[in-house]
Image 1 (spheres, rainbow, N blue to C red):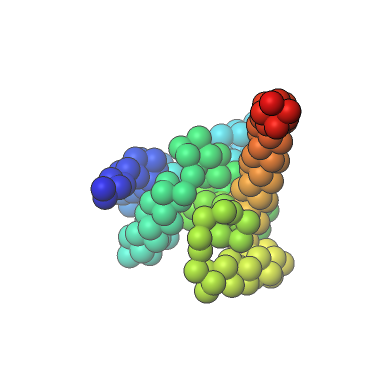
Image 2 (cartoon, helix red, strand yellow; image 1 turned 45 degrees about the horizontal axis):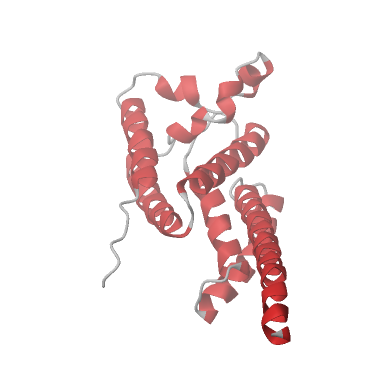
Length: 202
């Protein structure tokens, strides 16, 4: 029986919100200045600026379209791999990591790509550490992405850190899931052993 794939609702919502806010920005509503990274505003308690820049692209229109398409692909793929709660967590981790460092490295801008970089990092962790069958070339690409993300951060770009943060979070999830699976298997084996012993004695 063919498996029916779930529609990527979270990706659609995230991309649609950013598209709507960015379109509003292009129309000259002033939304960009209200939402973008602003160190001065952050110093005055405007903590929402750690997240709201994810809703506005400060790029030209054609770049906005390209970014949203790429984010849609990454987000949809991540929804096939992660439960929705984890998808949201990776999205937020990427947004916070990217825009926190962006406040210092690239102020007075906005963008959603850092949030999806967190999801991409999670996918890389799943490719390297997960139990799903993954093509060797994808594992190699995931492994190469780690040093590239470090270099990206070192040269002042804001996408490497969200990737690494997403990778770390998903790696912790994978380790925790594996530990729980081992504990469950151990408990099941312990629970069955007396029965096997009784049967053998009989």
